[in-house]
Length: 325
Length: 307
Image 1 (cartoon, each protein chain N blue to C red):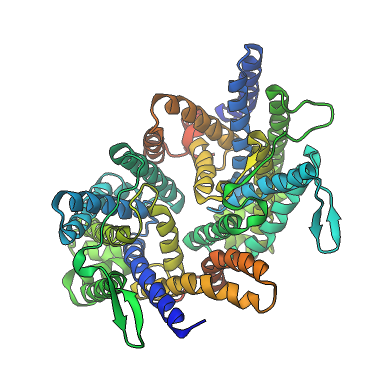
Image 2: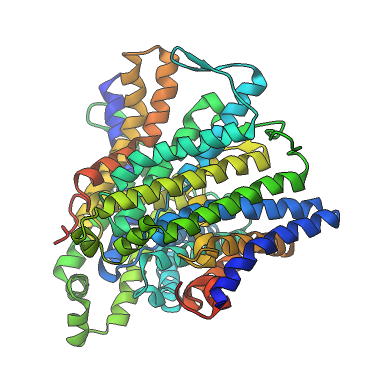
């Protein structure tokens, strides 16, 4: 096996083992940290489909993360207050069931990604970065100024949503759910990379003219990648809201878009396990450096700068000794 | 709704547009000449505001504070360009976004480390405080009027610099063909440092001027940075004229949308819904404007058309 394959085979089990060891060692906080890392990893796996495979530098993925979060927040809020959600003549009861919330989060993010993708893909390069940023900001400001669901203060959900047969309030059980979804998303990403769709997308990133000459419209591939990417990130948003039992406009903030991008680049763009490595490292640094100094963002910034300037290809490249995946 | 209120809002829009132009000019120059996306431009704005507040506290002079803001931010810009930014010119946009995002973290937390989390305040000097009566009997704050004047002066000065001086000639040449002007013996490294420092100085000036009407605090740079990006994207990245037009469009849309949209909606729905929906829509208006313009012209109003 090559170093890359070892890496792909080992990263996820390592994350699972950390959580399991922490659980057995009676350290529930570490289990929660691992859950946080797994959720960020899921969001980053989503972004990596657009960024790594499609070459689409989206600085607006917080829009989908936040949509997933609000899908969870709004459904749970209606369930907890026993007020049905009125959409025109339709009255929908809220829900506290995770599978339903997940489906709604995925559907909402994917649906939002279609018009955003259609409009944003008319541009390219730096304009694409900026138009996705603008869409993210639209959601952010809308969430702040729309008073129905807490506005600027956000929404607190008092009890974590349930999953049939599990007690989601036990950290390791909730981790298990998140971890399962993360593994599923990684498997999907691995499948997409080898599928005809993934190969064509990769080709469209490297040489759109040739792909067009072969009779495939690059923008349709890119749109599909953007939608899949948004759906995965939206699912991560719903889980993140459930982890914190809280949603707020901060989930739509552009800093969050930046951080999701940081996970991907820190780990290694376009690598299968890059996003997982990056997110895990980020959460570990957040915890360790945050314990040393309240101004830990300075050190995080320095580390990031060092990675960009001197370790091209991120951690995955350092570990496997190859500069591109 | 009176004509005076509208006139006042238009002036407010012009004022915020002119300040936005000071930010956007540097950003668009740096992108146009060096091809660099600089997310840390907002940090230089913040540095300018903090330096101005410190200088004003130490000397009591507003003009010294402005000079300190410009010079300090320009110096900070030059140092950052020499140490970090110049390694990014031949990288792709992704690396530039990440590295300058890292710079934001360093600048913001570093400033919090030095100055603490409490906002500082900059006072409007006596000779600029109080209202002015404009034709038509409108009372408008003298300081805000001065901001419009300062913005116009900066725009004119920048226009002259770029079109009439040797440095400006080199800047324009650098935008069009950087290999060629390097081959003609222009020290391209020094030119880049100068352009970056110029943009940083303008951002610092904007920070000091706006810090006087708002508070000076960590994180003040990011909202302005995003608006400045919206501005240059609307105007077309690299174009100074585009930055001016974009800044005025964004400033006017932002201020007028906030008062006109709720009132327009009040014509079709009940007042409470109109107020909340109007406020929500107004906060999104500039982003909708930008998305609309990009869909219509994918490289902005004055941007270079792809071949």
